[in-house]
Image (tube, rainbow, N blue to C red; front, side, top):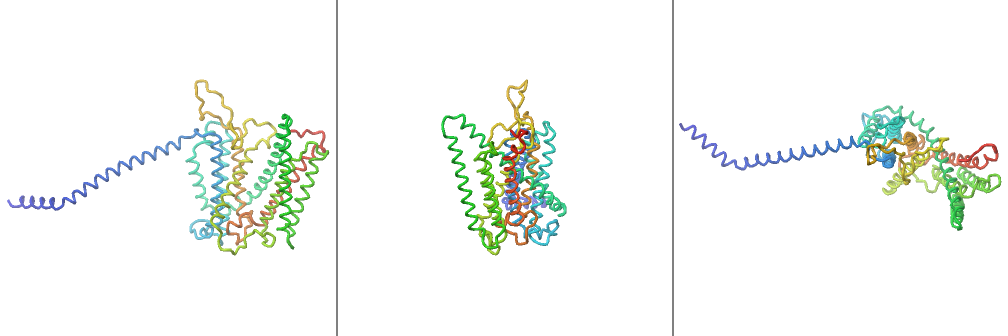
Length: 456
């Protein structure tokens, strides 16, 4: 008879003394409910965003896609330079990946650059193959699916860490060949640009009654030649000390070549020649000569070369150097991809135009039953596949620069050594000589073959 009352008293006591405990359980329940609700909402939002990212296939524009790919290339260059010059010593200790098989940081850094460049090259080759087949899916793949494309590219780069080094060494060998072709194509673009600039301003001068355009041509020519000869004197004074035969030869050949093709351009032998194209080519030759001298690894012949024993370089120097390299290579890729018409004998009506040009998309046929034109219905550009091929070759090109075309020495371990070495120097000299030969050929070819039509 006393057991129920005893138990009741015990429960009353427990409840009275455990009110705080009950409140705690109640609060946890409320918090759990709120957390579950918020987690459910967050999950729903994430799922919605993921679905939107996967389904936004055709909402981009051709110009937007072009900028997106160039940004990918620029970030790839920056990432590879960080791996090469900052993280290389750490990568040697990454157990379980192929980079750990390297004996020094230079080897690991080179292999890391090859992996980034090779992965991006494969990525753009796949897109080029897709864009070679016209259709709605090709247009969607070119302009949209950015979340998927970034994920795929990141996955390829990550998976490449377990691919044998020999595969990327072979890729590096192929890259050197295509990189030389890429550099030569850049020279062809420059010559074409020089002639187009001169033709445009001359036509404007002929249509105008004033002396303004002709004065503009003369002013540009005078400014370029003054800069060229000043820079040549600067290079003679700083880079041609005793024992620097390479530097002296590069500057001398550059000077002689400028005088030669400038004289040809204004002579009766080349009636189609002009002073402005010669001035533009001269400026580029001087730049390449200086760039070759700056790549000279001999410190006695390169006063601005790092000594190699200085402790550390400023963070600002590192950031600026890497960023400028990324922007420069992206700009070169954009220039090459914008000029596919130079490789065709037919006039391209739907070429990919430069970033600043409006209307880079192909013409769209109006829909019969739609009052509003939709970007989703815009057909794929005719040369989208050429754009991706150019980007793939650009990836090969940027894979050769941080590694000094595969010849980087063990002390080639900081950003001051970027693009410094005999391989880089000779590639620039060879590029300069090739541009000189191609430009002189454009001047004398009509006189050598008068029966042929060399008009554009």
